[in-house]
Image (cartoon, rainbow, N blue to C red; front, side, top):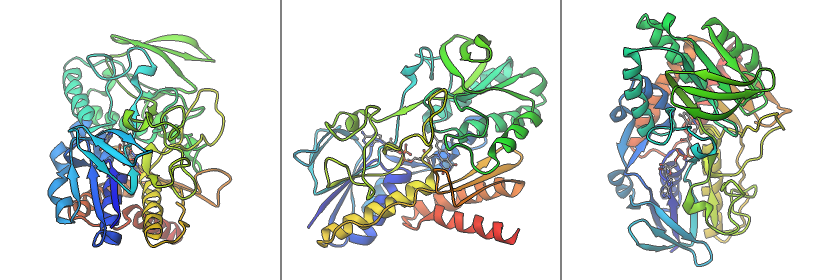
Length: 419
Ligand code: FAD
């Protein structure tokens, strides 16, 4: 009997656990080690931060669901990984031996790259990267509404996750207009991207024109190729080549930080790149430890092109699903004495909610030149995103291992054909 451990139980890890339990769970032992007892649907975070969703609507407890599937569950997190001895030590001190390990720990948020960046008490900006941060962002937003003023939204140098920053800028604009407060709130979008709509992907279809138009329509100014030097209470010091160093005042600011690898993973010798992301081969296997697989944001993917200010590549749900499918298939093959042969497709598909409309992006493959790109705006995208959220959470709560994002891209491609 093979012992398989999955670390992390979110978009990548939970789907890996469900798929492993379906594919090999009857005859092999599956253990999930998470540092949180709940699953939470991360793409809902912008809505949580504006008060359009409650955490309880987008989360569910993991233990019962996983144990029903026959998996063991530890919610004390992985403290260390001894990849030479094939052992995970949990935060509770349990030593768990494994034959195969799937790392799905997502990112650690590198607020400390920029002095003063990030949530209180250390920093002066809010974040939507975790549900806890999104809840705190909403609490700050409620305070801000009593005495509104300038807002800065964006993504710091080295960031890779730009879609949620655009989403948050636009839904904030919509929310403030609904409250008739918009005229009191100048909004500036500050981003390390070389141009609006780059998204860390060298653009997707006409995303530059589309997103510039969208920000212009909403009277949202922007700075691109921006480096945030530091953040002080109510003041952001931003450098661009055009304007030099600017001191930008704000009363509310949400900035997506750069990501790096989580400590338990980043400290394993030979496993990770200098930022702590797991270096994998084309089969999602560690280049140094062949029985260690990695999926999701914790995986190292090089930037698609050089940019004046560094930006990373986003790892979105569809891509993560394809990494999970490849990793599970390869583990199953290895258990059966076969050579791993499955590789992920690494396409990007994203539905962005802009509060009163939405934008869908499809990039196939994610690195240009591409066979296919598509970016379209419409109220249908917003409705599709809301429907997808409900569908995804309901199915994941029931333990369903279907590739949901694959279904979504198939539906998007159908719409493209109809057009
Ligand atoms: P995570 O979701 O970050 O999960 C990692 C898990 O591992 C977490 O539960 C974490 O607590 C746990 N963990 C960390 N360290 C340990 C440890 N030592 N031991 C045990 N567990 C640990 N993509 C899209 O396709 N569409 C979207 O609309 C979209 N919206 C997004 C919105 C936001 C705000 C963000 C931040 C990202 C969004 N993404 C979106 C990108 C991506 O799909 C998500 O980030 C996705 O959740 C990444 O999945 P993951 O499993 O790799 O990492």
